[in-house]
Image (cartoon, rainbow, N blue to C red; front, side, top):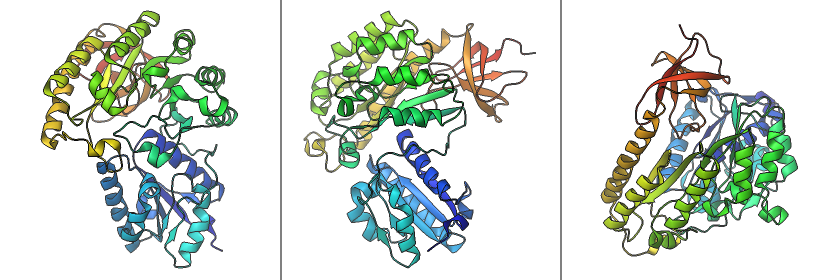
Length: 443
C-alpha cells in the first residue's frame, strides 16, 4: 500500500467553470486522504490534468498540456493522471497514444483515483474510465478567489444541439439532490457571490423531481446566511418563465443578470442547430425581462459560420444584436466536430470566412457595449472588489452586470479596499469593455 499522505498532488483544470468545480471536488477527495496539495507543478509528485474535449481546439490543448506535464518526470513527478472529458469520450484513442500518462479516469470516476494510483505505482498503465460509481461529491477545495465560488447544480444535457458533443461526453441531464447542494453551499463558508452553473440551470429538477425546481433552490440558497448574492449562468430561453422572472425581481440576493445562450438569431439556422425558439420569441423574452426588471443585464453567446449560413443571415444577426441591445456577448466560429449531426451537413464554410464573421459580430457588439458603458459615466455603482491590478496601479472589481472571467471589469482608486467587500464607485470614464472610477471617499 502506498502512503499517499506522503505524496504531493497538483492539478491543472482546463475548460469551463463546470470543469473547475469537478477539479475542486477531486481536490477534496485528495485532501481527505491526507495528501499535500501544491500549486507548484514542479513540486508535485502526482499531477492531474482535468481535460476539456468540447471542441477540437480544447482537445489539442489537453494533449499539449499533458505532454508538457510529462516533462516533469525528469524531476519530482512520479505519476501523471488524465481525467475529465477527453478520456471520457476518447479513451480508445488517448490510452494507446498518450503513453506518457499513467492513469486515465472519466468524468464520474473520482472514487477510483487512489485504486488506480496503487496499480500505477506497481508499474501498470491504468484505464478506469467508466468504472466509477459516485457522480456527486459535496466536498470542495476552492480554487477561485475565496469571496466567490461556483455551484454546479446539474451535469449532462438533453438538448441535442446538432453541433454539440456534450450529451455524448457528459450523458443525459442529471440534477443533483437539492439537500446535498444546500449542504455544499453552506460548507463553502462566507461567499460574496455564488455562481450557479450547469449546461442549463433552468432545467434543474425536472429529471429528479418531475418539475422545475430552480426557483425553489434559489429561495433556499439565498436563505443561507453565508451566501450574500447568487448569480445565474446558462439559462436557456425556452425555460425562463414568469415564476423565475418574479424570483429574480423580488429576491434581493439574486444578481439582476442572466446569461442566456442563444447561439443564433435566424430561424433557419436555429432549426438546423436544433435550438428551441425563434428570433421573434427571443426579442419578446428580452422585452418581458426588461419590463419586469428594468435594470437587468443580459449576456449571450452566438455561433457563426454554421453550415449554409449566408452573408444575409450574418447581416440579420448583426441587426438582431442592434435591436436586442445585449450588455455582453461572446462569439465563436462554428467548429466541425466528428460524431455530431452537423458534421455531415453540406455547405461547410471556410475557416477564414468564419473568423471574418466572428470579427464582424464583435465589431457590432463592441459599439453596443461601448454605448451602454458610456451611459454609466457619472453614476455611482456598487462594485465587488476582486483584487489589485498592479499594472494599472489600482483596485479592480465587478458591478452586477459583470460575471468573472467572461465580462469586463471596473477599475477604481480607493484609499483602501478589501477583496470580497463592496464599494460605491463613482464612474469617471469608460471604453468598450471596462469602466474606471474611484470610491466616493478617495483622496
